[in-house]
Length: 231
Image (tube, rainbow, N blue to C red; front, side, top):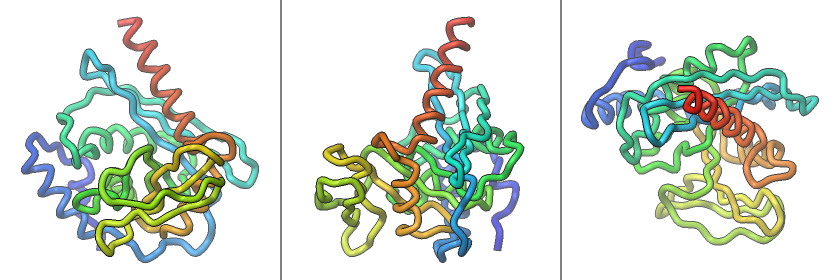
């Protein structure tokens, strides 16, 4: 069952409205594993904020994993319309990310967000929200854990440990580079934890964070800098 299409773009103005929509969308989360084939086209998305105004810029970077080549980028400026509330970040970012992904000429097989999936107090972070409203397989990679505890993974690239909340496994603390702090990987929608953990390593050949996220962060920040300096 798909969510009401209106919920994908509904404007919310209060925390209570946002929590109601989040609760409704959460009912449509698919954690059964998604497509059987490995993704070829992976998009990384990120949003940058101007600290002195309501300006924001979103970026999407699409790469072909079979060649390692960046095949497309999209940058979209906009205005933030919802306040910062922990646990409700999606209501600030999903609207502009939908526009950004919609301007890609090729549909991604998977989307990786700079943020959280199931590692969220209500198990519905940005990656979950974006996945449900687009129907795309999604996952999140974050620099810090939002909820849960973990044992420090081993020191080498590929070492990992479970990120848990009690007996529930929410994600992995993953060492993407030897001797570097781990990142925190969690499922968003229509994929599984082992797959997205392996995919995170593939997307992070040299640096701590996946290259597509680093690139999207750079593009969004650069566009925001140019926009604000010319304002």
